[in-house]
Length: 153
Ligand code: ADP
Image (cartoon, rainbow, N blue to C red; front, side):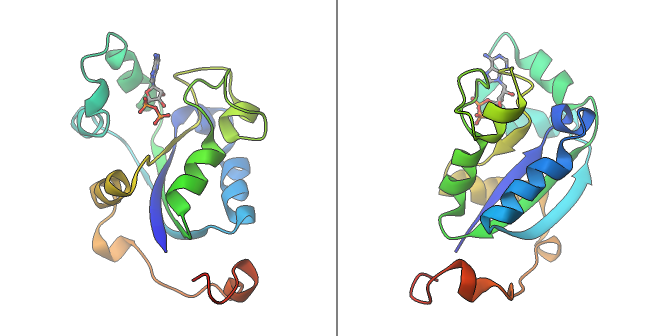
């Protein structure tokens, strides 16, 4: 099974959408295997958003991610990276499909509620960035036989 990183951004925390967003992942059948609140300092954001460092709006993104602490969540499931990314929707929330988190809860490119890992490689790097080994948990969800056929996992 795959693990992926979700960050509940300050836009969701300020708008009191945390429960709604997490509830979607739970209802889908993704297992929470890591969860904590952290403040993202400049250094962390420069690493996490290194691919955007040269963009004119980078300073604005950084400030937006520092309005409140964020919630970092590790989710586990079959094909979790793609599933979670699809649940988030397109970066530009105005273009995100209705039914996705961004499509349902946001109108913004920047204030777009969640971050989700975009590939196997990045999910591994991002999970290690935010979670120590002992902060990630292994446990068997009792509902596993009802989430998947036994030849799927
Ligand atoms: P995603 O979060 O969908 O993987 P990116 O990695 O391209 O998208 O961008 C990271 C974050 O930077 C976005 O989620 C969004 O908050 C912000 N961002 C990206 N592009 C823009 C933009 N053109 N203007 C403002 N903020 C942006």
